[in-house]
Every structure is written in C-alpha cells, then in structure tokens.
Image (cartoon, rainbow, N blue to C red; front, top):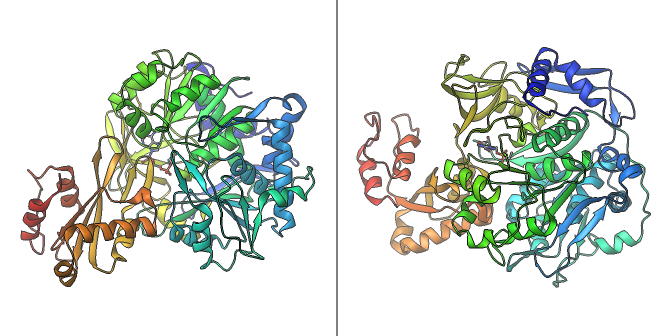
Length: 634
Ligand code: PRX
C-alpha cells in the first residue's frame, strides 16, 4: 500500500512523483485490478490540450470498488445509510449487498436498452439507490451525469439536453428536513424539452402520488424484480469516460466536465487513503451531496475503492435540530468527518449546547472542502468538534481536478489555520503573475496554476473540447489555470484566496455570475443586470444583484414586487441555491466608454466599502456611481 505515514514518507513520495511521474503513478496503479495492464503510463500536452493516463489499460472501476473486496470483506459494511427522519431505521449495506444491488441495477439499465457510452442522468436525493445507480452505470460502461436535486427543471433540462441522455433516474419526492421536494414533478417539466430520454426510472421513496407517463416512466422496484443478481462488468478502457459533471464557470452556460476511468480510480483511492489516513474498520462520513464532485470522489468512489465504510446522510444539518451531525457521529462512531466551512459556520452560530451533549470521542480526523475556511471557524472546529486531538485537513480541489490537490495529510503535515498547506504527491503548483510569469520564492501571491498533469485531471468538456482548451489552458500557455488566487507563505504553505474570475462561491456552491445574470435578464421587467459576490458571515459569499428595470415596469409595480419577480426567475432558471441575497434596482451600471461594466466598483459597494472606489474617470457617466452608493443595501 502506498501509504504515507510521516513527513519523511511525504517528502520522498513528493520528490519521486515530480522526478518521474510515470514511474510513481505506475507503482500506485499496480495495487488495482486490471483486466489488461497499461502499455504506457502517460501522454499529454497542455499547449494543445490532451491527456491520457494508463494508456491501453483495461478495467472496470466497479470491480475495484466492489468485487475485489468480496473475498475478504463480503460481510463488512460498505455503505451505511442514515435517513432524513431520525426515527427511520438506518440501513447497512455490506460489500455483498452492494454487489447484489449494483448488479441488479446494472441489469435494469441494460434491460431498458442502455449501452456502453450512453448517458444516464441521475436526479435524486441522498438515498442508497443513487450510489447504486452511479455504480451501475460504471458497471455497464454508461456515462453517469448526476445533477444535484436542488436544481430547477430548466437547469436539469439543459444538462439532460447537453448530454443527450437516454435515461433519467429519479424518485417520487424527496424528504429534506421538514420539507418534501417534488423531484418527479421537476423531471416531468424538464422532459417535455428532452426528446432523447426514452426511459425514466422512478424510485418510490415517500409514496407520494405522482404522474407516471405510459411508455416512458417505470417504477424502479418493479424493474428490479425482473432481473438477475449477477452482472458481468463491461471491459472499459482507461480513457473511456466515467462521468460528466456540470459545473459553473465565468461564461453563462455550465460546462460538462468529463472524467475518465483509470486515472480517476487511481487518484481518488490514493488521496482518500492518504489524506484521511483511513484505516481498516474505520467509519468515514462526508456530508456532501453526490450531486457534487466531493460526493462522487469521496462518498462513492474513493472510500469504496479503499474497501472502506462510507456513511450517506439523506437529511440536513439543522433538522430536527442543529445537533444532527454530532448525533450521527456519536451514533455511528464516525472516525473521519468531512464537511464544508459553511456548515461549520452555521452550526457554530447555534452555540455549544447542541454539541456538548454528544459523544464525539470516536473522531480522529476532520476535513473541510469547497471554500476558504476562516480562522474562527477553523478554531471552533478544532476545539469543539475535534477536542484539540484531530488534525484538520483543509482540502483544496475542484470539479475539474477530480481529487484533492493541495491538502494536509492527516497527522503528517503540520497544519496552519486557513491554509491548505502543501501539494499532494503528483501535484506541481505554480503561482503566475498577470503577465504569465511564474512567481518564485516565498511570501508571494499569484494566480494558481498546475504545471504537470495528475491522473484525475479533467479530459475535456462534454461535446466541446475547444471550450476546455480555452477555459483552462489558454490563459497561461503550458499551464492548467485553476481560476483561484493563492498565497505561498514563508513556510512554502499554500493559502487559497478565492476566485479571481467571475465565479462566486456561495455556501460552497460554485455559481457563475454570468449564469445568474442570464436568469435575471429573462424576467420581462429587466433591461440589464450585474451580479457580484460579497462577504457573508455564514455562506462565505452572498449574491448581490444590481438590476436595471424597464421604466414602464417601475411605474406599474412596487420595488418589492419587482425584486420578488427577479428572485423567482433565478429560482426557476437555476434553483434556490442561486437566489440573490440582495437586489438593488439601479438606474444604470458603471460602464466604461467601451461599454464594459466596472465590476470592481460594484464589488466595493456590495462589500459596504465606498470610501475609496479608485479611479472612476474612465466611466461613461460617473454620476451613476453616486446613485448606486446612495441606494446600496447594507
Ligand atoms: O475556489 C476554490 C473553492 O472551490 C472551487 C471549486 O469548486 P467546485 O468545483 O464546486 O469544487 C468544490 C469541491 C472540491 C475552487 O476553485 N475551494 C474548494 N476547496 C477549497 C476552496 N477554496 C479554499 N479552500 C478550499 N479548501
């Protein structure tokens, strides 16, 4: 096992991974089950982007996640599922159970004509069937595209359409805290616009009455009764696509990030085991949703590849009370706990009475992901959850990177609050200035790039390779550009400073400002809008929308009505996660003579810092700034 146990191991592994990446990753890959070994470890080019790992290798990732553990771990818990309602009994699925369920689901997919290379969209809450569906797709070589079940029907339709999916898997409705979310209804709305979908499989989760379209909609439990419990895994090439995951960028339309099979498998297991120092018998819990990359890599694939026990939670942290996470940790004796800073901040605000009544002594490692963690939240997590004995791994990575990139290795790398610390083996970060020159040395800041591929780097964006090249490989020639600003301190430690592009991070959710503007502009009363982020105590960043409305609409409706309409439009187009926190109706936007919006000014106003707005002399109409300042929402 390529396990790092101390700083010396880390230094050796890091050095070897840089000196001879092919040898290093070739050695790590030996630990897996391949149907045919690769001929060459790596071929790549960042200037005219392509990247291939374990070329010529044949495998099936689900044999590595499940079958290879059956001999020794058939009766060991693979997935523990905690339902939304604390009174509903949890279910434990052993490796033998997961094998059976995944084989059955794979056979159902096949019986409805899904073949290798077809796309299947999954729009479900956090139920075991979601994990089984993901793995069933991988088993038969279909490409899964999981869409977070909080997205609206419009957002869902555009993703189904872009992937040209043949099948959608969903549930009747979803429990979410005290609420129920009508998943199937949302799917029905979106499928009107998606002729490629032949079948919609529906899980009966709540038993709520729903519409079933004849010839298209099929109850999953009925389909599962018809099939065998054995399924022979499809032979896949290392570079066959495993999944598409849509993510927001600085342009309006979300991109389908494509990950392939061999490299993703090798990297997610390696990072899971090392970063969390996962040991046999540990119970690991990541609170993310499988609709995001964290759930893909570190709820499903990484932990199962490692033969671990992974907990899945259907509910939310604040229902029935703010002690829910801590109660679950104590109930299942969770050893590694991985969550987002936004959840920590929200629970921190609830005080300690919900924490101190639970026994958290099983915890060994705490993790965070998704956004920068502020010092106060880090200290609270360390002191009150980890009781000063659990290292915190602040893991920096992205949908595109597939796995963790810069992160402490638990108990190995000395931590420093707010720092993601050091690059993991195989990761070669570089800080670049605006001219594209590498900034060497320590105590410096720049745009974070990576100069050598790692096994789980994205391979393309679905259906548009040019967009992939342009977005990630054109800003700095020869480098992968992350979109993040970063500081390297005197110790060589990395601290992520946040996005340098028009992407905002709201409660750990990545949103493109252009995407929100497009949604706002669809509202009939709107002429133009500009969206920026501003610091938010709990969410990390909040959304501030400046909107110009049609004078006729302003006459006709109250400000409150207009704002409500704008807000509803964003929820309809994207989903509740993108709902603006603040909407200011303005008479104009600060534009330069060439028509470019000076977002710098809008950001300053949104931050509540109007004392020094910098040079405004190039603005077409400087008086606009005064009126925006006057109407600013604090
Ligand atoms: O800005 C960084 C932030 O989240 C972005 C990636 O978002 P997404 O693709 O949705 O993936 C999130 C889960 C991996 C990054 O560009 N980010 C992620 N982790 C951290 C972070 N910012 C600071 N510290 C982190 N640990």
